[in-house]
Length: 116
Image 1: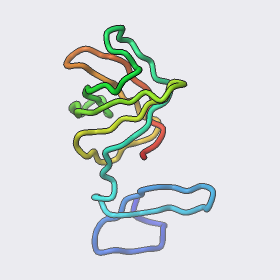
Image 2: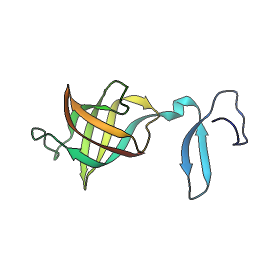
Image 3: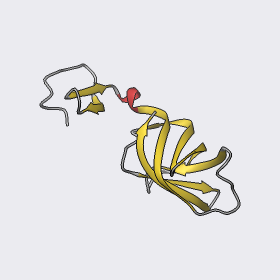
């Protein structure tokens, strides 16, 4: 949506962040959407082989129709984990699922809550 925010730019702008406390919408160029960090909640861990006490090298899928991205997952406790992507990803979206894989085996997953 490019109408109604009262600004113009020679390049397309994208919503980077919405701050409901200050009632501000932060916009930027497409490159500003790129990130390598996210946090997930409600982690559902299915694997008995990989222990959550250590960082886990794996791959993650952030959209059902996108390819997997190599990542490291660090469990923080209380069902929350940090995910560090090995390559940047455009448009990490809170509320979407993050599924964690070891090759073709699902290790677990959770819900994206924010970018770091």
